[in-house]
Length: 372
Image (tube, rainbow, N blue to C red):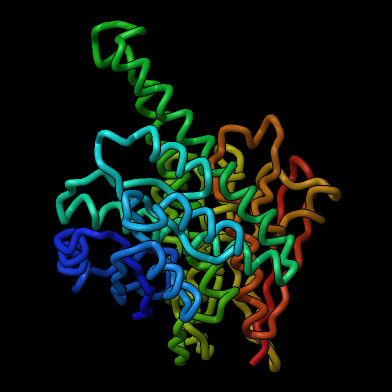
């Protein structure tokens, strides 16, 4: 657990000790952070004392009262801003001075908490400012390292999440206002579309977590001898409900006891991406053939379908992040645009290769080779 230094600047002893008690055993964590943050509380009763502390040690967060003996809080805030210190400031203000709080926010304060405040109100405010500080520092680090591609990644990600949220929000507003009628049946299509949108978001988030673990090397791997035949059967069972809906038959041609040393979760992700895509992008009444062959130097896994196929230009984009082939045949098919990218990265963990052969309106064949 990491610790942030939090400076409480207030001339009222009760405010300072109350803040210390409220945050003493408090910690903040988010799914996107590797560890939680706790707080080392430092106190100052005047603006002059606060500046002295800021000059002598690194401070992460400052709770700053404006009405102080000597220089006031706004002057301390201005000092922090002029010195360009990496400190997130939250003003402590009475209800009578909200105008001053707005002014402080315009000068660079993150936000303000009115007093008297409850311990829970303070914790909620600290949770918010901590998340902001973490994201701000992460963004600054990305800029310093010149990782423009990560900015692009985040930009696309925000778009991919925003679109379904906007759609679901719009449907809910229509239903709340009963614009389409008074019966639940009047909203059946909207409800179904909302569920599909939420499924797509869940898939995106799960795929994103897998991708993040691969990129950062944080994913723990359990390498052991696996039967690829058994894993393929498990994957086919998973996609069977979708195959039944689309009237697609899935065939498996693989010898039992096809043992390969790998992480079972990773192999399932690889197979599931190719097999589920072969079903999703197939034609009604189509077929999928999953073949596993053992050569002296590698296992070859082939997934072939009788689906809509992929043009030569689109094949060049297939394994890029957030790429989804968009045309009249795919517009109603949901997906994260990350699945094939993740599969390729996992294949490369085993020094393997993947290639695609496809003809529009005829079908596609993905071939994976995993060396021993």
